[in-house]
Amino acid sequence: MYGNFQSYLQNELQSIEEAGLYKHERNICSAQGAEITLQDGSKALNFCANNYLGLSDNPRLIEAAKKAMDERGYGMSSVRFICGTQDRHRELEKAVSKYFHTDDTILYAACFDANGGVFEPLFTDQDAIISDSLNHASIIDGVRLCKAVRYRYANADMDDLERCLKEAQAQRFRIIVTDGVFSMDGNVAPMDKICDLAERYDALVMVDESHSAGVVGKTGHGVAEQFDCYGRIDIFTGTLGKSFGGAVGGFTTGRQEIIDMLRQRSRPYLFSNSLPPMIVGAGIELFKMLEESDDLHTRQQENVAYFREKMIAAGFDIKPTQSAICAVMLYDAPLSQKFASAMAQEGIFVTGFYYPVVPQGQARIRVQISAAHTREQLDRAIAAFIKVGKDLGVLK
Ligand SMILES: *Cc1c(COP(=O)(O)O)cnc(C)c1O
Image 1: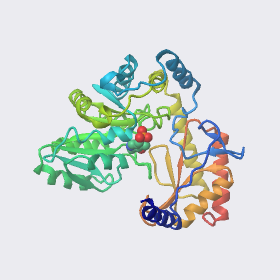
Image 2: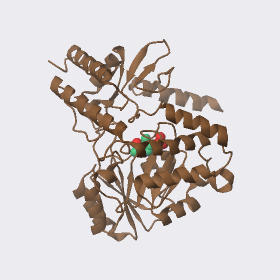
Image 3: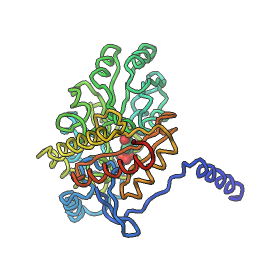
């Protein structure tokens, strides 16, 4: 039986490889961090993790995870509504609600599940979902699972959003959905304008704060803080896998009845296991840490400013960013791959992106800056960029 299917898969895999799109994975043999150890024992500086606050190997979170495991065990062996809820799950949900100034929160195994399970329980074929064209794959999949009428507007384009809102007056309820920070350019969604339009055209608002929480806003609480939109956003989703410690876990937080309905009807919540005690324990500790001080956020912002300033001074073309994502524009696809490999040779990990991940002719190196990077590590990365830039003729 497998024979024909096997040769079909072999051909497909080969064409992925030939197109240069095959994803090869590196094995890291240390904890995730600013500096990582590889299988051959060599070390590299990591500039492509979502470790924005540098918490992936934070001793306080590791200790909290161990303590939670000692006190509450290893796994829950259940979904939440059968017998998978500990007192601590509710405690973490309250901490998330406090952080985002919302009524209540529901935890998921990942933000992918939060987005996958948010639309279908709330909206029907009578309703409209109006989605930014650069929204994350998990939002796109979540929208697909729902029967609502779909509208798509150009990235952060408020005129195009308004056009969609006008058309969507034909539906019963409308919701505008956007990422807070878009992961390829590092630009933010203009939440104040989005909320204004939502009020004018009677729409709900949902924002995915995965890349923005811990990064943008005066104290790093995300785009709602940056644009002072508390009370105007109905649904937030987010991940514990980026700024918030980097392990796993996701959440939806927002208006009480919305969260109540998700607990009744959201399929990834109802039919998938509870988060394990160690993740929950470390999560509670994480929000305590962030409440005590925003030093990590401040350091990350200083690092981003330093890196950008030095790179622009060196002559690189850097997209304006309001986040911890710096897009070093190269425009040419093969060059972006050559550049990233040459950087790896220099012991610096960055990612080269090109079409179809970014628009045609917009190839780039994406650099993700962390609070964990030291000045010396930033300087090493900048020096490597300059060396490779000169070697490959990007800099004169
Ligand atoms: C990373 C990311 C997700 C997925 O988060 P996980 O918790 O890893 O599933 C969802 N949405 C956005 C915008 C993201 O950047």
